[in-house]
Each structure stands twice: as C-alpha cells, then as structure tokens.
Figure 1 (spheres, rainbow, N blue to C red):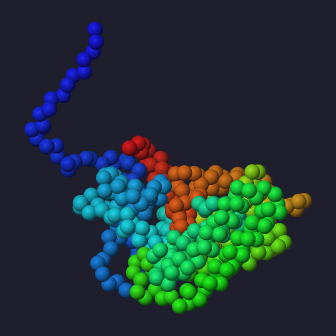
Figure 2 (spheres, helix red, strand yellow):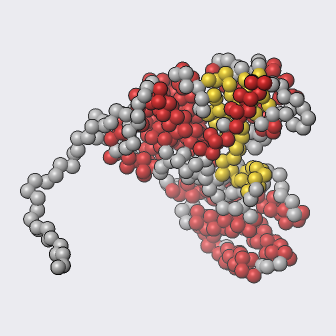
Figure 3 (tube, helix red, strand yellow):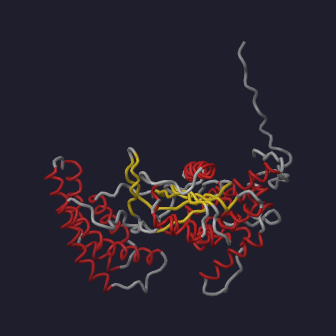
Length: 461
C-alpha cells in the first residue's frame, strides 16, 4: 500500500496573521540581566565625555546614545557583523531590551552603528571596559589587590608580507583607486598603461618560472625598477592634482592614492635594502593599507612571527581583564610590568598589594620600581639562579594566579570575541576590536557571576 501525500487546499487564509508579535522577555536572559545590572547614567556619562572630545559642536539632531551604546555592548558579547547586529536589534526582543528600544519601532541601521563605533574608537571602548571592571570590584567579584599581567599579539587579517606581493598590491591598488580619484590621476594611469602591463608580465613570470635564487632576485630587481619609475612620474601628478571638485568616493580614492604614494616612498628603500643585503630593514612596513602594523616575535613552534599589534593584558583576581595596546617598543614584557601596575593604581586609587609576571618581565630595575611604587609582594618569576622576592603561600598563590592569565588570553582570541584577525581595515579599528573583545569577555563574566551569586539560572535562549 503506497502512501499518498495529502494535498493542501488552495484557499487563502480567511484572516491574515498579524506581523506584530507580543512576546514576553525572559527576565533571566543574559542580555536582560546585563541591561538591569549596569548604571546607564554612568555609562552614558563616559560616552558623552568621549563625544565632547571628538566633536566640534553639538549641532544637528541629538543621537540615540542609549540605543547605540546598547548596540556596542551587544556586539561585544559575541562577535558579529554590523548587518547581523542591525538585524538582531530590529527583530530580537532581548537585544531591543538591552538597547532600550522596547517602547519604540525605531532601530539603528548598520551605517549608524559604524559611525558610532568609529566615533568611540579604541579609547571609548577602553573606558567602557574600565567601567565594567570597576563595577565588578564594587560588587566584590574582582579584587584589585592581587594582579597579574602578560603580553600577547593581535594578528591582523592581512596576507603574508613578502616583497613581490607588496609591490604587486601597490600596482593593483593604484589602478583601482585611479578610476575615481580625478581626471589627472586617471590620465596618468592611462598614459603609463604599458608600464603596468610590463609589471604584470614580470609578476606572472616571477610566480610561474622563478625557481632558483638568482631568478627570483632578478625578478624582484625588475619589479623594483618598475615601481621606482612609476613613483617618480606619480609625484608631480599628485602635486598638480586637487581634490576640490571631487565628491564622496572621489575624495576617498584621491586620499588613498596619496597614501599609497607616501607609504611606497618608505617601503621601496626597505625592499631595496633587503634585496641588497638579505636582512630585513628596521621598522619594516608589512601592509600598504595599515602601515603601522609590525611583526611580533613570539617564538612559537610553527609560528615564530605574528603580524599585527602587541597588547598587554592585566588580570585581576576574580578573572576580569584590562587590555592595553601600543607600539612595539612600549608593549614589551620588560616595560609592561610597570605600566600595568601604574594603570591599576590610576583606576582603583591604590597600588596592588601583590603583582605577578613571568620571567620575561624580571629585572632588578623592575623590582626596584615596583617596590618604590608600593607593591608589597613582587612575584616576578626570576631568571637563572636569582631568588624569588616572595616565598611560601604568597609565592604559590602568585604562581597560581599568573598561570590563569593564559586561559583568559586564549578566551579573548577565540571566535566568540573576535580579538584575533578582526574585520578591520585600519590600525584604529584593530584597537577598537581588541578592546571590544575584552569588554565582551568582562560583560559575560559579570552577568554569569552575578547570576551564580543570586542562585539564578540563566535562560538558554
């Protein structure tokens, strides 16, 4: 006996289902508890202070700061794109509650969210993260008297920076940007089209047929010559061109051509130095779009270098973290030891009683500096035969806390928070994404611990 599929009737429904739903929000939902646990007046005061520094005046329509700050917190709790955040805020009830939009139909679009994130920058998100950590201290969930630190690298989402690839990217980017950068730059690319075609052929021969060391060096030398000639011809064109008549994307493209020219002025001598000596030049540029990135020597098996930015991570007893970004000379173990203690002193108004760090931060100068700052128990792991500054139970406790900073860094780098290889096209946005990962880590930890202390089981959806 065969089963016959029952056919549905073709008659339309008598009453159209309502598209306006009425859903009760679970009070134990993570986002709801987060919205209830924060003092929004203090949070908005922090944001207003950042806006006052960066805006020239308050002309125009007043912003929906409550909703925009809630959107930043929503994006911090788990990594998502601007489009995904826009969709969640528009259709997901707990997200709307976090943004304070349950009594209105309005919701921000992705362009508004992007502009607000750009306005906040790394400093704004860092200030929000500091507020969350201070709240954890007030709630007795974190203890700033015992602090440990470490450094790590934030990888950028860029290709491997070899010399031929950088020069090829310069050629390609210049051609693409010239289409909207004005008539003079467009005419320059058209007039030098033959040179671009020759460079394209040189790159193809290098990738397909340069097998020996001499062939590869010869191909790189030819490409260096092409780039040098284009740079010499492009300089007077940029000097004579003007972006006054350009609009919107034209101005962006013109600025990109200028940046490409300026970056290549510094990069080309570095490539020539490497081609001549075989050594990498100091402060080597590794990306045309983000020229301030650098290589971070990690010494890991299978991954000796990471290309991006150096970060310092300070962990308080209780698991909450503070993050700091800087140049490759500032965020190093030998210097971050003191920076971490000074930052905790600034935030909490008192010097940490105990401080731990691994042996990379140990030196007699650092021990003397920490003692002068007022740190009682200095737990810098010694090098060689040097004795510890602490012993007994204090030493064991500092070693135990020091080990726990590694899982915290690993959690920041997981896919949930988007610390590593963020969707950022500038160094400033990389800093923003790194601080946002630390903010999301602390927000989730704050809600979890508040729920555990109150005996509340968080809703799963």
